[in-house]
Image 1: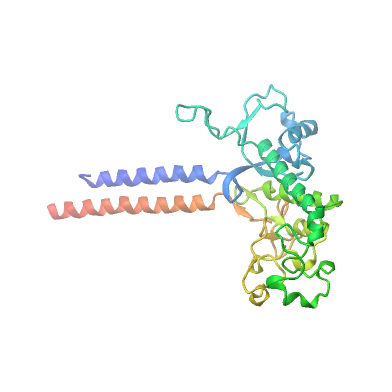
Image 2: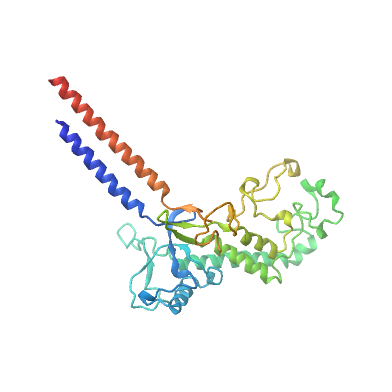
Length: 339
């Protein structure tokens, strides 16, 4: 830079480049999926979705939902945040594996002969959810119907009756196995055995936390995911006949319990956050805007998609301006000394 005009040019170029970058980032419409801006809001998963202008009817919606959500479609009936898919050949049937491909897949190359992210599809995620939930349900049913554990009056961890660390605290319960004391080592309770409501509530909750509801916020010009409804959490605990002292649908401050944990109960802290938290009430409260459903499945502001990117771009713009201004002042000072 041998003259002030070069610094001016640098300043203009830096500003224009950053403005273009900011414009591109401003229109990023990713929704938050598992803590990252990696999903898109798929309105075609809404059971009532219709797009007459493009010839998309409820029949197409049913076919689309059956292919992408063969298991969770019974619970996910709303616009959901999902991995982005690409319609590579609209002439093929909707229920065709060759028609829908992951948007951000990487084709085969010398380093990865089979490509990458080829299986990042909505359907594969739905199948994984189904396999995981069925495995947990089957394990639970096996424990609840185990004659071996019943004879031992113990749970799957070998803990039975009121003994060990909880002996003193459980003395108030004469027969521990017949009273919902909540004591550590309490024999297995039949929650899922002959209880289809419990199994269904568990499957639904698993679908909710993996396919959160989303919507388009016009004011923020971005897609947003919503948190889990507190009612969905309560429905699981109620359907599975959990004592209310064991419900974990409360605020994060108390690890989702209604009551704070006391160190003297166990001599240590044992709680952790319940999957799917933080929760939000499904009804309108405290002046929140009820846009696109406040929570999953039924708030607003659960997750801003591109706020962090915008902050990064603004900082980039500020640093570019400082850099160009520094060169401008430096060259100006050098030329003054030369005179």
